[in-house]
Image (cartoon, rainbow, N blue to C red):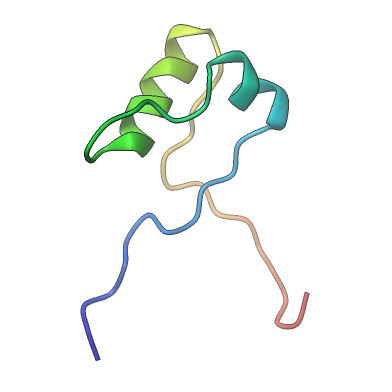
Length: 57
C-alpha cells in the first residue's frame, strides 16, 4: 500500500468557488492557490476543519 493522501477533501461553497475563478492553473499547490484567492476575496478559510459524517451517508 502506498503513502496516505493528505488534503484529499476540500469543501467550498459554489458561489465562492465561482467568484474566485476556481483553482488556479498551477503545476502543484492548486488548493493553496485557491485558498489565497478566497482569502483575498474576503472569504473565511478554515484549514483543518472537520465535518462529522456517518458511514454510508
